[in-house]
Image (cartoon, rainbow, N blue to C red; front, side, top):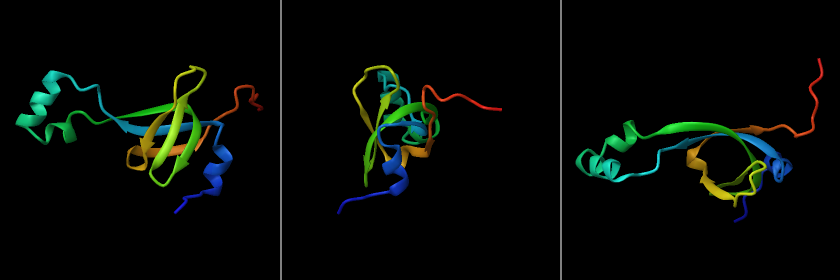
Length: 97
C-alpha cells in the first residue's frame, strides 16, 4: 500500500525544517547504565533537534532527509521520531517587509 500526502509531495526535493527526537551516540557508559537501569534511556538520553534539511522522500514508515549543502548521503527518520515538519525556505528567497 503506497502512502501519499499532497503537502509532502510538494516539499520533496526542497528545504524543510524538521524537529526530531534524538539521543547522543551510545558509548560504553550509556550501555552499562541502560542494562542496570532500563528507564535511563527514556529519561536521560532523549533530546530534540531542530534543523533544516532537504526532504529527499517519504513513505508510510518515515522521511528521508539530507543535510542542506553538505553533500552528505541521505538518512532515514521514522515517523515516531518526527516531532514537527514544516516548509523550509528557498536559499535565494528574499525577505520583504
